Image: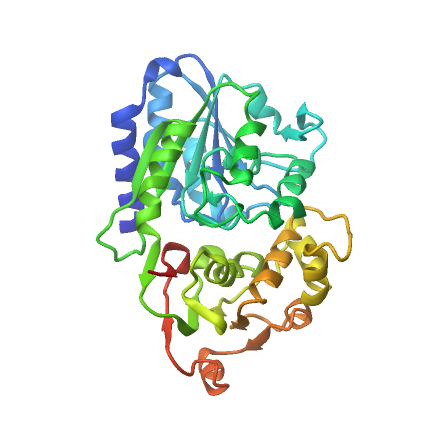
Length: 387
């Protein structure tokens, strides 16, 4: 087991020793919702949780909350499959377009996986890090979006919430996206949270921390730490930022592009107006293979001018889940220039007016790194903001 996995396992074990109550799970059906491979979670760290559920006599099952992302591949969840086999636990992937999803509220719309509804208790495992819309990932998002229906996901990523300035990175208390997430799961039974705040980097002296308990309290405690941990305060604006994307988010443009939008659309961005953001990611899946990623590609082909016209209400279209990432890219490009390094040449990036380079040296030779700049090894855990 790697050092990183050991540290996450220790964090989970500490959280469970402090707050896990076996009596709540005795002879219960428990669905454990886990994120897909786009989150920095080592599944082996969940072993202490399943041991405790076994000891409590719970009938556990594991549901991978995909949202509209592509299904996970066997190689990505080998350790999770081993856990399921060891603990005789069913393992399934959520399908947001399946026929057997349960409608909790047609008006909301609140639609979830049937396992969420017929469980005595749900444990939502989340990694808490900055998020473009929800403020921070984790919390009820793992159930409402990760295990939600396509209509639910499209509603949550529609233009109304995207236009609202309170829907922002790091914002929780008055964030309408976060408030609706909580409302979507109100009709469900008890939801507990195992919420992990990753270490800022693999070499960091700050260790991963985990929090366990009712979802609101576990998530709230995790956010307090994440606010301190994941923002880097700078004294003066930068001309350029070089952002090598960690492997978990470098598989496609849909995920990797978050690096650029996080630094451009944060309150008090450290990158100056008209500066350059260089995203370095291999993106072997191109824009991405899931339904949401393909919707994003379709919207990117419209180009930033049309995307901004729609955002500003000068053109009306019906949007669906996944397209929001193209709109956010267009918003970011109102503030900065964006370039991609190391990805395959993609027509959707060209349509967005995003320059593409084979290597970082090519970008440097194109004068993209002139003036005052900075390389940030993992921007998702170190977003630069002006002091």
